[in-house]
Image (cartoon, rainbow, N blue to C red; front, side, top):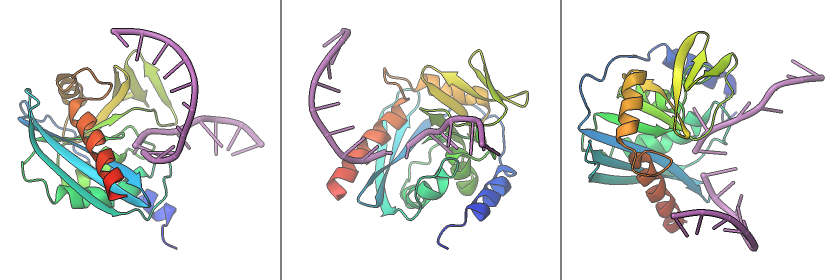
Length: 204
DNA sequence: GCGACAG
DNA sequence: ATCTTGTCGC
């Protein structure tokens, strides 16, 4: 077997136990958006570090890797982490927080891509997703995404925001808000998405 | 059997 | 995500 779903889910439960929900402690000075695009069985990632709150581009890095795991709902991290690992190794700007294209703790096992990424690298992360995952027991109350009485995420504009790691939901919403520049997704992710797609076309 | 899900 | 034509709106 090349990919054991049961073990993957168990790994997520253990990572979820290591999530730290704490204040970022002051405003971030550098925010890094990361995203992955696909082409020809390979994953192409891009990391864009922006100053905050000015949002000036400070650094752009790219990386690629073979994609050995097919997309499976709730197990996205196992498909994208190989590329993200190589990507993070290149970033030198010391971001104060990372924005990831996917959910954080709003996940069946409280371990979406943003959380998985944040715990593995022990860095603050914010989950920003364009679509909603099916999480049993979840309900939308106003703009709050509640699961079992606890607010795990927030609907901000047309995206779903949730804690990844080492931040509070309030930190997440405030920072995402401060990164909006007229697009559906905050600027760090908009640029990372754009660049990863361009690199995927050239790499193909 | 029902449910229906990031990228 | 990627593939893909036409259509709407600034």
